[in-house]
Length: 193
Image 1 (cartoon, one colour):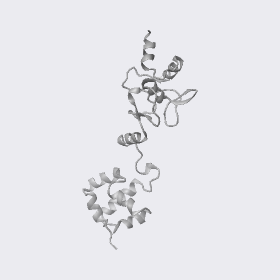
Image 2 (tube, helix red, strand yellow; image 1 turned 135 degrees about the vertical axis):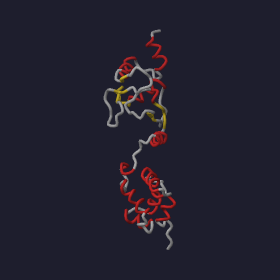
Image 3 (cartoon, one colour; image 1 turned 90 degrees about the vertical axis):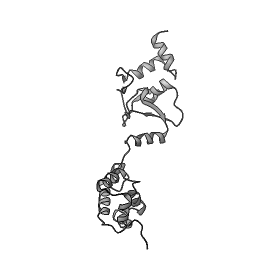
Image 4 (tube, helix red, strand yellow; image 1 turned 90 degrees about the horizontal axis):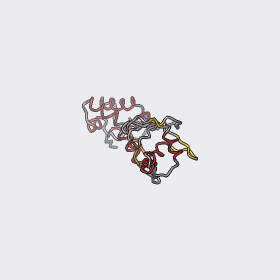
């Protein structure tokens, strides 16, 4: 058995034709090792994922995953450890569902934060102003802040508690040398009527 046939036996988990395999791998820039990204050099979608056509269009990294590991289970994604959508290195690919993919993205700091999120009613400056004005006793209540920015008191509470916008609030609180609790007391977080 030739070296190519042994490799096909070992990896070709989907039993594709030699022609399809050669066509797929001819569009990958192999760097000569299994550590670096294997970059897809042919057509890509708008997000940078490689497109490959066998009767219909597939994402190239998914096909490479299937070639090495077999069929992808229903409702599973092929995620990238390297965060490079054009990478086809099987050592950089892993299976995950949507939740795992979103957690991976967040843990790597790739999720949209702050005003880049798209649905945000605040800018980074607004959040800094809320913290600084609260620190300087410029608000008498969270309701006052909520009214100023046309949001609910719950949203303001979540900002002050560090549940939202923590990438802005945490460093600012450290710089001011004040705790969340102290800041909330300055704003009179608990309002009585």
